[in-house]
Length: 245
Length: 56
Image 1 (cartoon, rainbow over the protein chains, first blue to last red):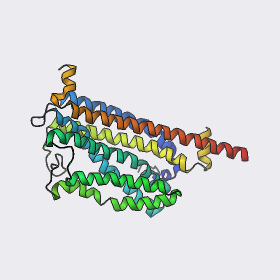
Image 2: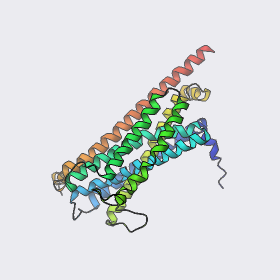
Image 3: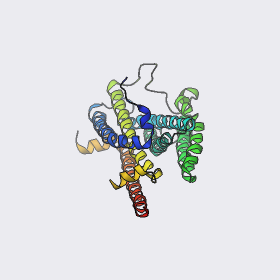
Image 4: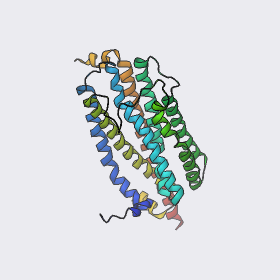
């Protein structure tokens, strides 16, 4: 045991300085990994035999699609914690993740369309995976809109947490959609149970870009949670001390 | 490979750069709006603690 009392950080007053200190580190990691990923993606990875250069879109598409689902699950996890333990900070973390999750969902859909046009011949189809990913975007919008519609932040926490938890059923639907329905979107190229079906350098590049997306998400969420803490705890003495310091 | 070949992306330039540029724009938008939100929150917090200080 390291002797760190993690519960200490469940109080916004203790968590705030930790978030302030962490952001530059995660931002730096994100920038370095993205630079390496872009270099590998454009200078090292060879042209794909079937898709030509168009396949380079997957270096953003796949990490963005992973993040869109992963952020939703993490967000729903924070929502569950906030409902069970009635903790303010968990609800704030969920609130901080939602916009970034929505952005990643948008990027996954956008880059998917731009990859689909040259490869499948269409920007959009009502395919199972694409449709369920679009529903994910609407779930993020719904969560954000519901929060903004309720003035009392603690009531907003509870209502939006319920919505987020109900919506989590959509995530396995997105993930397994390519198995359950045999529509346009192809199956997974990377799987935990089978060897990947792509060239090693392409796979490595994709994973580095995914790690960059992780670090970016952590940095942005920790920055946004600082703003949320200031917005919501404005009247607390310690927040006033922060602002005047 | 020269620059115009690189930008052309084997004929897929529009799709490849259409994806990368829009992603870059999204990231910049998110960072700018986040920065603005943080400034706003700081400003309001400072205003609240100022009025409190005057009340005391």
